[in-house]
Image 1 (cartoon, chains in turn blue, brown):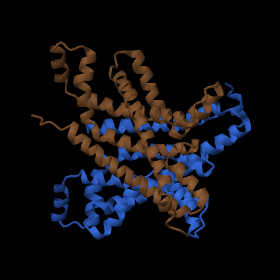
Image 2: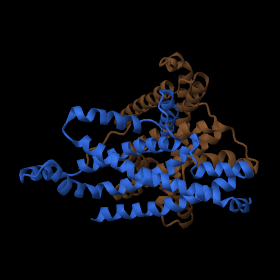
Image 3: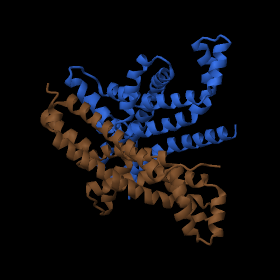
Image 4: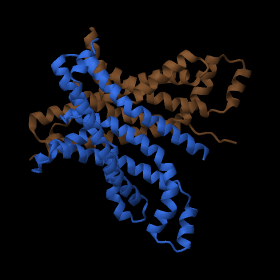
Length: 215
Length: 220
């Protein structure tokens, strides 16, 4: 084993690391917005409105993210829509992660007892007031631990974007391997870098869950 | 543009689906056995050596991407002269990965079994192994069956990553068909739906297994 070779190419791996953090942070923001909206719509009463939302959530939670990436990145140009790799990755991970977050949000909202909803309606709050002031603040305690757990999964899933050639950490690792022929050392380093971000986050999630258990 | 390409080549894609399915089943069985061992090791906190080792294993595996684990086992081990066939490396990687997740689920199931069950079983004179195997585990699995079923379906999606090793599963077949016909959108939409249909069928089947073999008991 020779980790010196990894140190020589550290700038490439570091660059990949930053791209991984960047795409993860961006998709966390965009997919949380998409997931929140989809989750709220799923709990609303308008059946005609929610059937496309249900179809969206079902398909994106019901298939591997890899095939979704291929569908968008190779499929859209086939239909005559050109899409850059960055936009394809951002779009797919937003939709994929948004579908999972929608379910987390829906489960959180549905965990709040109906009495809260009825009481809010009785005192004359509008739907948006009720959601903002009564339901969501309570649902948030249920939503946050699985939501942060999902962010960790998302961070690790962004590695899959390397398969279509997006230059995040795994892809840069493969570049280094092509130059050095040291797959074990490089992949171990890449894994360690994922661990460094993911482990503290997972401990934070554990802490949130424990706190909720006693609250 | 030919939207019938995937249907014309359904036999080809179907063989991939069959491979995806058996790879999933083998990976699941291996990860379930290994995960049960890990869960037991994590449950007995007073046995320091196995507890520490299993905890490190679970944390390391759960906090690194499965794709990197696949590459490490296939390409990384080759550096030390361990050349695995792609499908073996893939199954091993999926089993190693999912064992960590399953162990956490099963451990939660063991913790949820009431203390009275342990006491009653040991009063009957069962050995520790018998208690675990015959009394605690069946209840732990019943308690966590939906989560275990979800993990099974997660493995179906995980097998798509084995296409990077050219394992001939569904994703790989879709890629091959795409490079032969260039009908990207029809093929990938069809295969996405195929994955969805497979996962729906599997989830219905697992719900039936749950009702049939792990009926919930009246708690009183």
